[in-house]
Amino acid sequence: MPEPMFREMERARKRAGRDRSAWVQEAVAERLERERRKADIAAYIRSYEEHPEHEWESKWVEAALKVGPRYDDEWPEAPRG
Image (tube, rainbow, N blue to C red):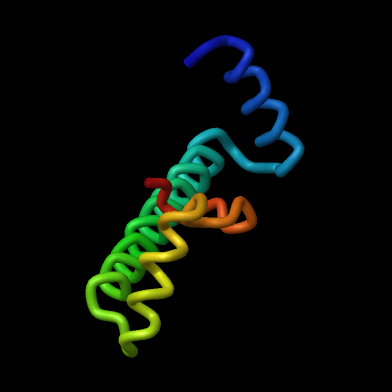
């Protein structure tokens, strides 16, 4: 781990009143949860794109994909194409 990152981690964990092991476990758990959510969102979107509920939704998705980016920056967990 780069020294600046280690020093910043140490400051953050001390402010939180956590020992290093607990702090790292919490950070890893949060990262794994973000990865799980990202995969779940990608699977949901893929499924919906492959099997829309209505014909007009399929056409809307096709049109939207032609005119711009797929997902808004306000949804940072959304998979990027």
